Length: 246
Image (cartoon, rainbow, N blue to C red; front, side, top):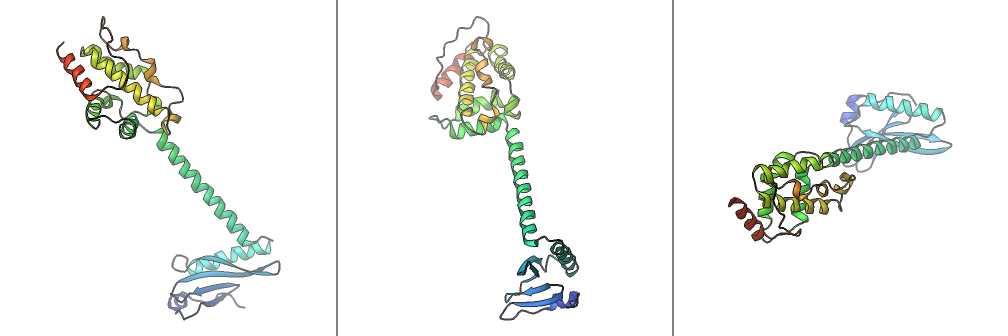
């Protein structure tokens, strides 16, 4: 059968019937026209005496010239002893592996970039529930912790940075009880996070808040008065009001 029997116009004007149509271009290349009007390219070939078909794409996306070039490449593979369908499956498997690798890399990139703000949002949504719907807790973090550390990746935050942030409250602003209470809350957030993904994977070096001691963030001579536990909103407000009296 002669090659290149079709024209671009013939492809464009080919009409559907009530049955599938196969319009030959030659060399095993066919334009397939379905009853729905959908047109695609099909290569019909024999490999080891077995007749097979290989889809080459939609006629809307693949031009006649490209379909011919692809068909010629596949015929060359057949002549060299390779089954195009096997080669296609191998290419598709490789492409799938590449896509999955890209997705995994993007997930890893996003995980590595997760910030303290992200961790706080996860904790306050799923890890803690106060009677005031966490309003007081949110206000405290948004005022004294998140402005400085919120945009930093969780993996890179050190005990030194946490200590410095709390010292500004306890020593510079002379609010020892507030700093003491905030340290407890920060520790509780980290303890919650370090048991759960993705935070667990980002805290492989441990909980930096555990390395911060109360005496390091409160004024000299201040005696810790808070037993470490979950404070209620009324207790938090009481401690803040007490700080304002000093």
